[in-house]
Structures are given as C-alpha cells and as structure tokens.
Length: 142
Image 1 (tube, one colour):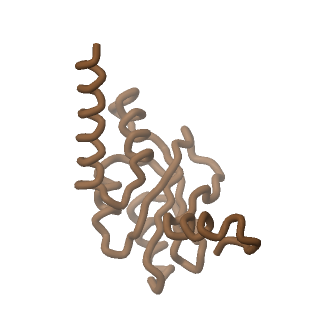
Image 2: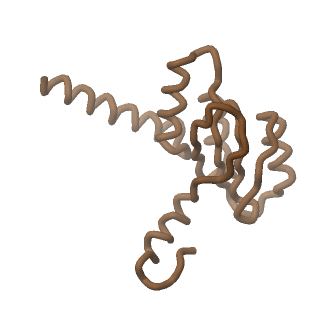
C-alpha cells in the first residue's frame, strides 16, 4: 500500500517537473485540466477561456491580429494591453507555442465547455503577490 502511494507521489512530482521544463509559463492547473479533457475526448480540442499575460509595451493591435489569426477568436484586452483573454479551442501545441514566446509572461485558463461570453478571471502572478503583500495593511492592492 505504501509503495503504491509513494509511486503516485513520485509520478506526480515528475509530471510537475515536465510541466515546468516544457511549459514553464503555463499554470499547471490549466495543463492538467486540458489533459483531463483530452483524455475524455481525444479527437476534439476542448474550449477554454485562455488568459495570456504579456510584457508591457507591445503593439496591442498586432497582438490582437496574431491571436485572431491563430485562434479564429478576437481577444479582449485588459490591463493596458498586457492581459489578453479568448474563448478558444485549446491543445498542448498551442500552449507550447504561447509559452515559448519571449513576450508572454504567464498563461492561465479555465475550461468553459463551449464558446461564450466569459471575461478575465485571473491575475498575473506578480499582481496577485502584490495584493497578498498589502492585504490587511489598510491600503488596497495594486
């Protein structure tokens, strides 16, 4: 019994290392959720709300055109052009391409089941840390 539990823990740790090695900018929960959905239906790419956080200073119109060309969906843009949100079909190759981009800082997402009107639901990791650091100090985060 103990060996089986240890084996599962080791496999999980190895999987986390592979996530970090090959998709370092992607939230591990997004990867797991995508793999789980693909396991249920391998022939179809599931639809996710994908949130991409980028470096500041990019040409938002060029980024919008690129995302539209790649996904067929026009992104919503937030946070002064550093946070792009789309509802799109998703697969590991797409995540890899996004993660490999020098302009991308972080990728998060949620399974949506179908294309709908969902807005952003995540903060970039650095923004979330600032919020936690200032919580309880009498001043708002950010």
